[in-house]
Structure formats: structure tokens, C-alpha cells
Image 1 (cartoon, rainbow, N blue to C red):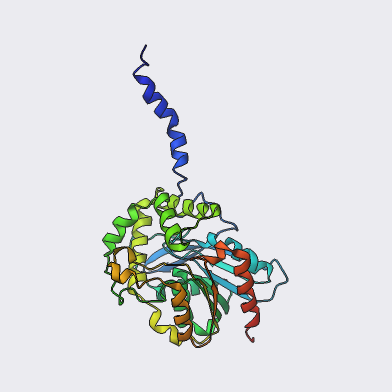
Image 2: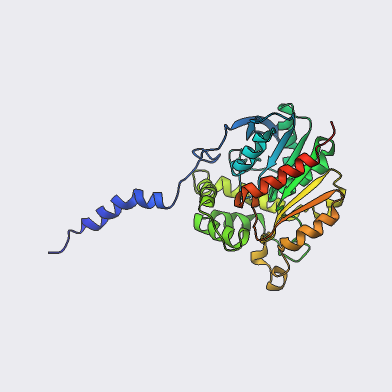
Length: 339
């Protein structure tokens, strides 16, 4: 006796919740529904004729307070939340820690139109710090946040006591090296197609040299869930605008102008390079060699210290937190600024 015709559709309907769960969570356009490690506050301000808000974490020193503040600047495929272990380590060492989500990212506004520039994001961050009563701070930037931290230090040198860059992108000028230009529309179409599997594959191959740790999946779900949630198109559009900013606004030529103590923390297995996926094989072969780039840029920055993590990838603070924070805190304390 053959099964009823309605049985397959009934079984499929019953499986839908399981399929949805298997595909991962969805989050709101400002990452609503995703748990941050510390309380998220919101800074409201006006910019380019728009009412915007920046999500941020402001974590007091949990150890003996040393009176110093550290500002953390996240990367393109990261959020303030991905600094969780760094916030804990710095707070326990006596620092007040501020971890904002930049406009266009994570818990912050995704405007319909915005003239993205590193100068604008630096200005936004400086307004936040001013509102929090922070006049000077050490600034730590990761990935794209390394480009922003560099721009911030160039724009507000008197407010930056120390600058630390973790596998910053922008240690080379991809455009000048021959990477083709993608239009904002092309970036947008690409971003609309993001998936958890695609993100995981890219990060495993580019960030971590083919390696993966289960704890990284939370951050993949964070990014994928934001991109496929109800703000899908708004998130993708802002992401496209941000990629255009990254590609067209190099900081490479101004590393020589940084005057504060600067620390480069480099996982040498990283191969991140914007646009390398559409570069010719000849050009691609020359890009993203962090084992070389760290050494080269350390020579360009007047007061630079280079710490390499052999075999580690794009996010050593997430890959080996204990080793990373030991190196970071030793340098922060050694170069303790005179007040």
C-alpha cells in the first residue's frame, strides 16, 4: 500500500523548524537578539544630517584601577563583542575599556546613505569619548579597526597615548599594487549572497591558514545572522559602502607620521587582502604576506615595536588569548605614558 500523497509534505512541514535552526540564527538590523558579553549602551548624535546611534560597551576596571583607558576598534567582519576576552584581560589589569560598534556595523545605525570615511568614523568615536569624559586613551585596533585606529591617531595625536594594531589591514595599498576596482553596486551584490558557510570557509582559509576552532562559530553566526535578518538589504548596502572606503582610502602612506609609541601584533599566517579574489594570479601572489608586511611597516613607524605570533592568523587575540594578552599588557605597562 503506497503512503498518502499528503504525507511527504506533512513530513517536510514538520522538519522546517529543524531546518531553520540548522541554518543558524537571525538577528535584527542592529544585532538585536545577539548576546554581548557586557551591557551595551547607546550614544546618540547627529552626523551628515542624520540622527544616528553608536552601540558601545564601557567596562570599568575590575582589578586595581590604574586611571587609564583603552579604546578597542573592531574589524570589518567583527563587532565590539568579539573583543570579549580582551575586555576581560584589560579590565582585570586595571584599565577602563571602551568598545564601540562603528556606524554601519553590529549594534549601531545602518543609514540609507552615508559618506563613509575613516576620518568620519574617527570623528564619531572622538565625540563618544568626549561624551564619556575621556580625554586621552590607548587605542587598540584590529583588522579594519587597525586602519581606523591609525587614522584616529593621525587625526587626534594629542589624545592617543599609545597605539596598538592587531593584524591591521592596510599594511599595503591593494589598489596601487594592481587589484581591480569593485563598484559599490558590485560589492552590494556580493554582500547580499553572504552565508554562514561562505563566511566560515573564507575565514578558515584566509584568517587561520586552514585551521578552525569551534569557538569561532559563534562569531560566524553573529555575522551571518545579521546579514540574513530583517535588515538584510540595509546591512549589505552599508557593508558595500564600507568596503569602498577600505579600498579607496589607504593609510599606508602615513604610517611614517605616527609619533606615539606603536605596537604591531602580527599573526604571521594571515593572508587577508581586500580584492585578492578578483586580482590576477600574478598580483594575488604578491598580496597579504603578513610575515613580511609586519616587518616592513614596523620600519616605517618611528616608535614601533613588533611582536609576531608565528603560525597564528588574522585574530591572535581570539586564537590564543592568553599568549596575546600577555604580550599586549607587557607593552602597555612598559610604555606607561607620563601624565
